[in-house]
Length: 100
Figure 1 (tube, rainbow, N blue to C red):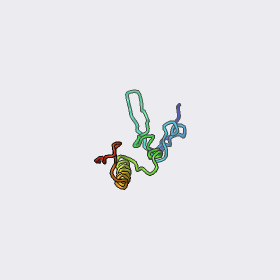
Figure 2: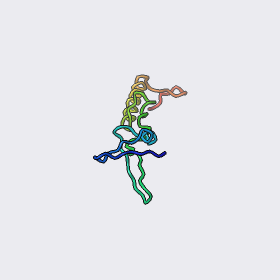
Figure 3: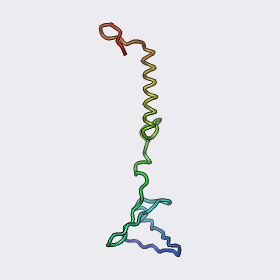
Figure 4: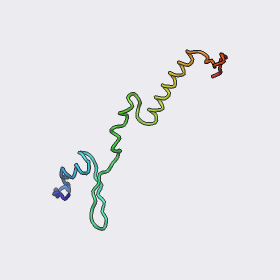
């Protein structure tokens, strides 16, 4: 693909729509200009992964990141411990009470 853009008096360019779509960039995104011996290369600067917008979509009620998962586990384990305490001592098949 070859596209042209005109530089304004302020040194700005408008990136053609086809190029923006090919790079996957939108308004406010940043572009990186890299020069090698043959010319310039333009690539988008990724501050987030392409999948970050989907984070948490499969885990409703669980926060993002390690702390969110740790909080969810603490809540889950707290409920389980309460249920075990309310159930009383566990018994083995021989009928004797087992230690926890």
